[in-house]
Length: 199
Ligand code: ATP
Ligand code: MG
Image 1 (tube, rainbow, N blue to C red):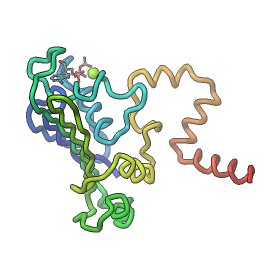
Image 2: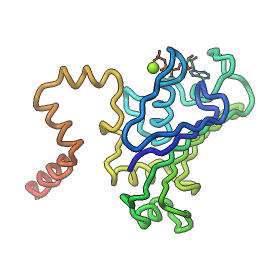
Image 3: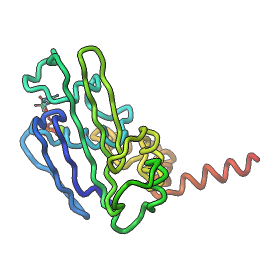
């Protein structure tokens, strides 16, 4: 399964609806400093609820909404931003029933694609965050549970941030081994083995 396309709307520096295609094997994004490359990564973390400690570069969630003046003072009135991550599920890695389960309804359309969308809305005195799975309103935990089944997790290494590389290099061999086990999917079985031994 891979990301097929991102649709950013008023997210950070993307002040109008922008579709970003991704290829199956490898996609690189290049551009001048400050052109929005890292903002694209932030958009994936935001939409999939993957923000770890080192995650999204924003103090508050509402900083993620496009601000034409890019000042510290956010514009008043209602503003909103959204990011949609379109995953290619044509090989059926995630079964229809898993998606139905997560969405809480079988009215989810075609499951060759899985779309995860997050929208943030700021009003005069509050802000709201909404998640959607194939256009159905869901909770973050529904999305996280679904993604965990295909090995995408907030504490995982699906997204390797800049600082992570140095951290991995400086780690002890044992810690590094744990990361490899986790990526290989072995860690889960180790944990279950430990649980079983305790029982
Ligand atoms: P570098 O090559 O230096 O890493 P980059 O391509 O990764 O650059 P980003 O960090 O993605 O660049 O983009 C930074 C730009 O995004 C800055 O110009 C910043 O002003 C702009 N930006 C961040 N948040 C917002 C926002 N809410 N509204 C408008 N612009 C924003
Ligand atoms: Mg950058």
